[in-house]
Image 1 (cartoon, rainbow, N blue to C red):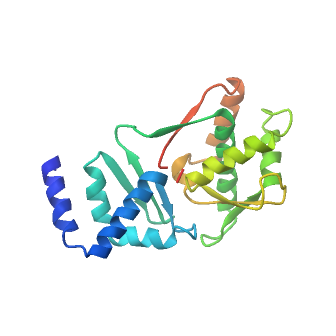
Image 2: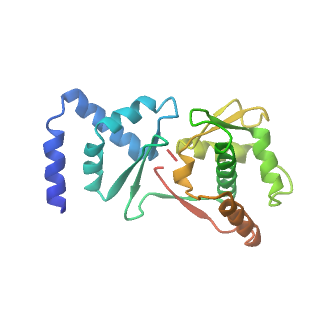
Length: 214
């Protein structure tokens, strides 16, 4: 289907919407562009997730005009948006990458233990311990850097946190979004990437789609 046909299909769909639905469509398109991920497991996103799913074809048609792809992962109830031309990419810093890998490994491990309806959580103390266990750190990273890393991950709806980042008992809620931000399939793949990071001295940055709510 060429761009003219795509535009026609979208227009014919869009004009049938009520005014309130058009306003809702505009808001949700901007939310997808801002955050890239919408996850039903995240309480603030749940209603919006189902609203998008109910008119999924409309969003697919609209974003296709700008070379964006809308993906719907039904099992995990995640919607993500990315650009085919690799625009709007966020380059992760070294420690952001390491934290993301560790959270992904933890999520993988816990997936084997909990049901699909359970939230997967990690304490700040567990995260710090996991970072030290990599051998990449001589001591804990400072509170300000950890706060900034968690802010980035919250920004893309990968996690939420309860409490302060300098409190060991604060909880990190890890959402299924992380499966699509970092789509490694086996725990060995994550361990390999961490080991490679160690060999390279951690100077190689990783890229992640900036929709990414991350």
